[in-house]
Image 1 (cartoon, rainbow, N blue to C red):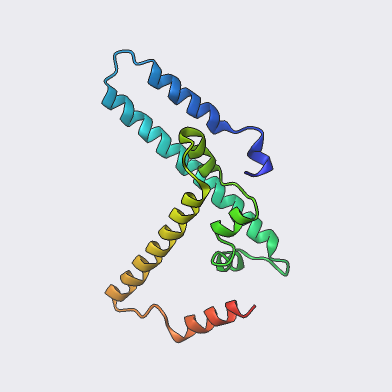
Image 2 (cartoon, rainbow, N blue to C red; image 1 turned 180 degrees about the vertical axis):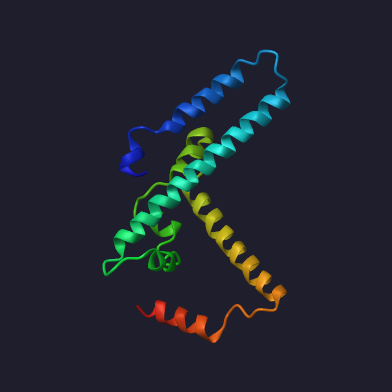
Length: 151
């Protein structure tokens, strides 16, 4: 996790409040209580995921030494992806959140899930282009891909 958020860990308090809420069930039905907790967990994980994305984007910006731009940063997502940042020791806060809640969620599962989601999203994007009758891999795009890999 980034040093900026490492000492604070606001989501730990969130998990503790959820556990306290589960143990003290007043007159609320179990199903309604579960659904409310589910939405809270989902919202918190989305917030943590946005925070992780921002941190990775800023790190990519720092790693491009010559005239960094947002466009160049976006182009380097294939090279400096979630797997790369986990290998160098950056712990994602979303994974830490789920690990503290359940304790069995490994970082390998987290990386595997995100790599799979990236592939599925790319396949959907290509399929959408095919349905519209637009060629996804044009000569210009293939040339750009070759140029970026040769750097």
